[in-house]
Image 1 (spheres, one colour):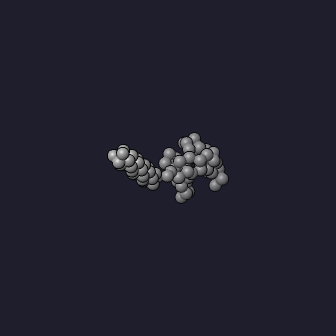
Image 2 (image 1 turned 120 degrees about the vertical axis):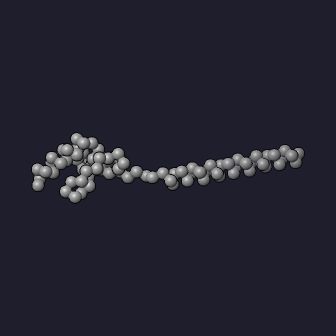
Length: 82
């Protein structure tokens, strides 16, 4: 009877420790992953991840676009205002 109780106790401890270490590993992975910042395209007003945006410096200001088409349209509209 003691052997069964010890086996059951060992089994419970094993699964408890396994769950604790799995949760610690998952929390470490989540903290190490960078969160991508969202930026808004000034022409079409679409939000896009900063990493996949097209960065163009216009008049000393960085603008982020979702496509070349939006960047060209934005440049065309802004050049007519100057």
